[in-house]
Length: 271
Image 1: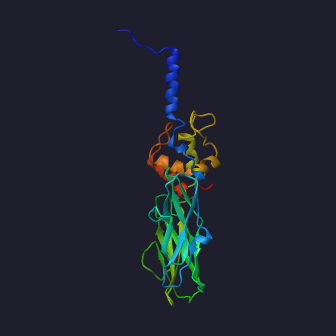
Image 2: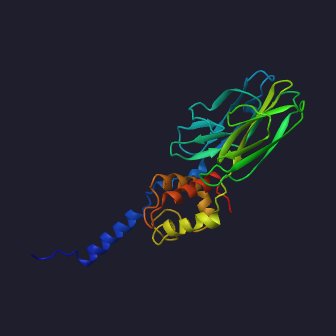
């Protein structure tokens, strides 16, 4: 039987098509999430009227991205309504997710009570990626000085130190026991995953490879600098997690996917 061989020109074309398919300009990570922006204008905030009334509210302003938008208050469930009501005094941030799966989070908006001087600060330690080794110490001031504390929706306790915390945003509430006034803030416990130690090597081995996310590669952008990786951090997290990325290079292990997610969740720092 005579063996079939592709002509040299056809073989070259087939090889080119295979290369382009492995890392094409149609990669899902080509979506630019940096256009999405969200804020809570001062004029769109309503303070609660007193300590016993949860009648505060915030309304969100969004630009960029792709509609429709979904809205999450302080890490809660997403909803289609940009307004959040029945709020007590505290700090609130809204995360917006657009139709492309891009997310952006507003700066914190403060709802305060008239005449109430209570405030608090927190000190946290790193939790580790996918671990629960974080700690939080709360320091409250003002009010009557008789405080109790709540982290993550648990019971109020008199101790101001919490341990065994996982990474992420925590709802922290301090209560002035004398007048039952409460103040709530969102506090983030960091994973502590290092770009220099953990993330850089993963990108260089599996993503910024010849013909793909490098200068002149088939992908629509390069991932050869920290700034370029930070700009695409949210997309990198999403598409490495679901297996869409990388399309070429060394496949990622679950541990590598977790480390990318932990680093991005920490804000993609230069560490």
